[in-house]
Length: 88
Image 1 (tube, one colour):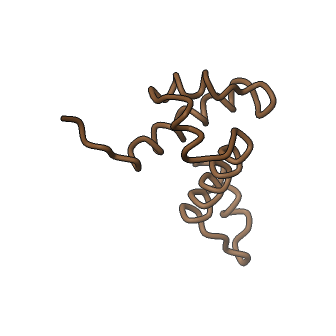
Image 2 (cartoon, rainbow, N blue to C red; image 1 turned 120 degrees about the horizontal axis):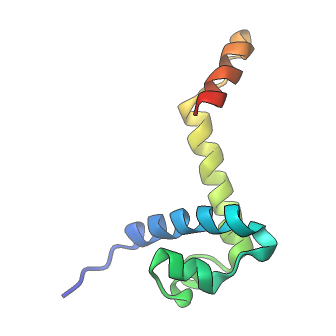
């Protein structure tokens, strides 16, 4: 019997969404292709998000949060901050 792991499915979805949006942009991305990349059903995508625009926004917020937490802004050392952002 398989166990359900919604967080693992969501992680797979985010990884697939990143690849799909990078390749096709928001307008060109397709939920069915995105679901196939993630190895999940298109219906599961819609159980997490209302559609691809909401998924895009959630992915963008996740990337921003990761970036800000990885390289905290230091107004007194902006050149170093810019270099650290570049190195991510």
